[in-house]
Image 1: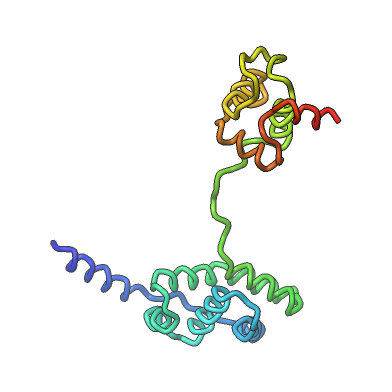
Image 2: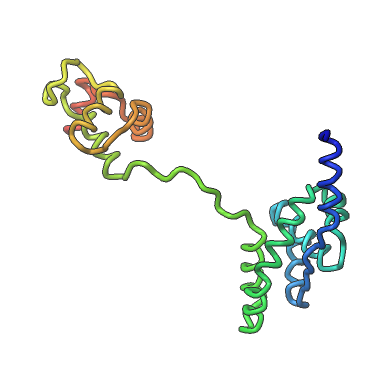
Length: 193
């Protein structure tokens, strides 16, 4: 089976999948229209609000995709996300939230979800301790060097149990952010004053 045949079959299956129905209350529609008309709203937010309004008017995913220049997967994703949040929206309206509060809720639904990233590896205290080491004389740490290098500071931080592991590059970033270079006699004078 060639790629075009497979791709064609997938397209047929995708077009057969029924789009999730979007029903908007009058207040939801009003808020979405305000987002679309807002001159300071981010483009992504406006486009997503247009997408939901189009979906609520019965427009197909393919049509929305072409008109808003989005991939159909994106259209399905945002339609699905709105559909999943419909109970939360209804509950907010039942509680008679203000239009402003509903606007915040809708903007939250139409915003990107936080993306996973690396967690901070070092606490502020650890960074401060590493920078403090750079203000010490190397001889006090039994280091056979005349001045601290990021590599020497990384080794010393591990030796003292401040961190389990750290790269010289991370140490260099800490020193750069703190506006301190590795120690020299003049820096020691600055640190002691």
